[in-house]
Length: 337
Ligand SMILES: Cc1cc2nc3c(=O)[nH]c(=O)nc-3n(C[C@H](O)[C@H](O)[C@H](O)COP(=O)(O)O)c2cc1C
Image 1: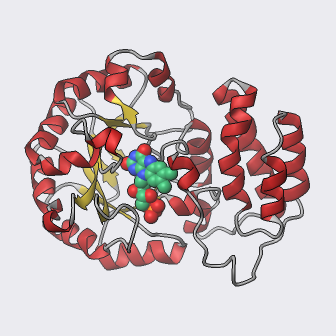
Image 2: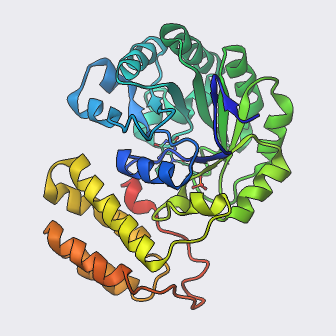
């Protein structure tokens, strides 16, 4: 099944929602490289409900490229989420995703994110109300449970499917696990076997096209969602479709295009330069001279100087094949704050 509600997606590869990363500029790059869906990062339902200007800025998107445009919301109150989703629909949202996996305390202490795994009835009420209020397809993203003693993803899935959920993404680690250990893909397979109508989106530890194939084949999931491996690597989506890795020129042009779009998106040049540093750190990961480049560019505040430093570095930077860099994880913690 290659569809989510009324939308048939062009391939099974989805960019994971990532706070501070899945903003319009990066979503557009990923879409252009072939990603079939790129949901927004988590957006506060309370913030939209109160028409908070800062929250509303998260709704900006490119109506030409971002099709369908999926908005991820977090919150704990069905009515607040329904009203927030209506605001999202006014801004062009075509699909609403509910975050039921975020482990961050600031989110869970208000009954949102992964706290919803402890309340399947409330989670289902959210999906039902948001769908009733907006008429839009509603999806959800869960973890396998709150902790080892309560891996209740099948129970949660039953409640959500009954409420009309169109697709369910699962990151098979518990809330207590955070990012430790390995994602347990057997949960994805069990979920796919268990549900009747919902599309299943598998997520967790996919780093390469071979991993993505393995997840599709071994779990039977309908879609594969990729997060950390896509940091600084939008070309992964092209490679997933059988295309080549980026040439030096393509990588350089991609970084500069992302930087220009990021400057326009953020508005304030200094804030944009500073918030782009994490992306530069990911783009340079695994290239010879990356740490010297990062140290140099992190000391620059002028956009022109950053662009020139990027040109100098990325047009000549070769892959570092030494064993210390290979196999090292991309450091995503900068984005988590
Ligand atoms: C920097 C960062 C930010 C994230 N922000 C979100 C978010 O806003 N919403 C969400 O549902 N998951 C979020 N996640 C979780 C990812 O969507 C994904 O489930 C997780 O990274 C596992 O997939 P991976 O192994 O492919 O990275 C975030 C992950 C990272 C690394």
